[in-house]
Length: 80
Image (spheres, helix red, strand yellow):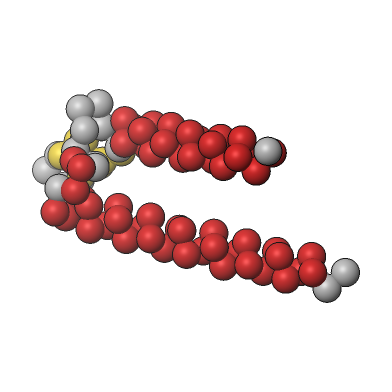
């Protein structure tokens, strides 16, 4: 019985670490042009006199497709 909370705790630590690394990659990637993240064609950018709006639609789709693929592969490998 003690093993289940320990496994869940390890999973949360791994997920947290992955999220921190992904966040750092996205922060520094946009500053230094890492893989062109955040500046892809199809991303919505509007700059007016007093307002600026930016929504990275295509970047979000690519990240979602990548993460879906990674999670699908992990799921496939864990079933074996």
